[in-house]
Amino acid sequence: MTHEPGDLFLENIPAYALGALDADESRSLEAHLQICPSCRAEFDSYRQVGDNLLLATPPQPPPAELRTRLQARLPSAQKTTRRRFTWSLSQFGLGQISLGQLGLAAAIVLLLVLNIFSFLQVRSLQSKQEQLARHLETSQTALAMLTYPDTQTLSLEGTGVVGTLLLDKDRNVALLTVWHLPHLQADQTYQIWLIDPQGARTSAGIFQPESELPFTSTSIYSSGSLANYVGIGVTVEPAGGSDQPTGERIFKVDF
Image (cartoon, rainbow, N blue to C red; front, side):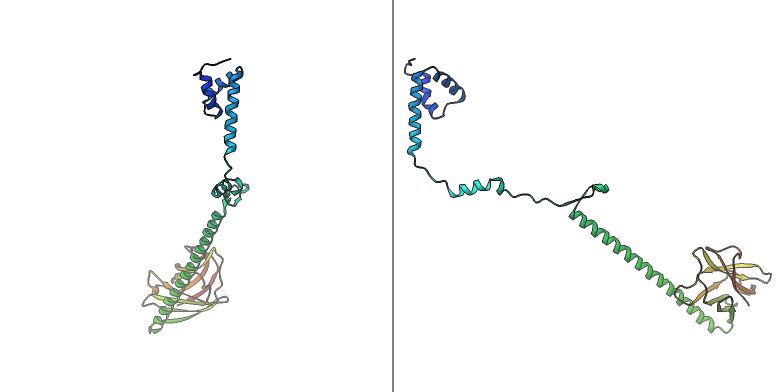
């Protein structure tokens, strides 16, 4: 097969040898080379020239920074992300908790415990302050009554208990002090009764023994005149008190 000058196949052979043809032109020329010996010979001559050009160029060592860039792209050189350790609590229905979350939870629990402890300490101090305030009030009342010339001092005795009743009928004030008063159950209390000449009982309040002292003092205030009564008594009653005496009588004092 012969070609005239300006033939498209002949003009494309140099570009094909250099790999400069597009895909469609390359496929067309490759199909022509299968059936055209003269074009194959022309292509072989151009390919030899191209190979000789490559061999004529002395090899050049790559830049040092190129080696560094290539090594940095290797998988072994990539920085691995440090995995966070997690503690799986899925068996307890709590999901996964990281160490940071666990530390935060522990800090919250510690703060909660400290707050509860502080609250209990404050409550204890408040209770002691209230107790001291009652003792101070009772002591001041006793001192004041002892200065009154009309104050009666009456001794009382009961089963295992002794004490004193300070009574001022004119000022309508009485102060009861009892030693070695037994402690009661949580659902019980001591109740004071004022006794009139007919034997009727009127409640004058309830009280509990002091937990840290061997004696208990309590003031007795009556809505009516103490001159209308002839004595007092103390019984054990259910917590909150009773309308009338129902429990064991601890002692009785006649005026």
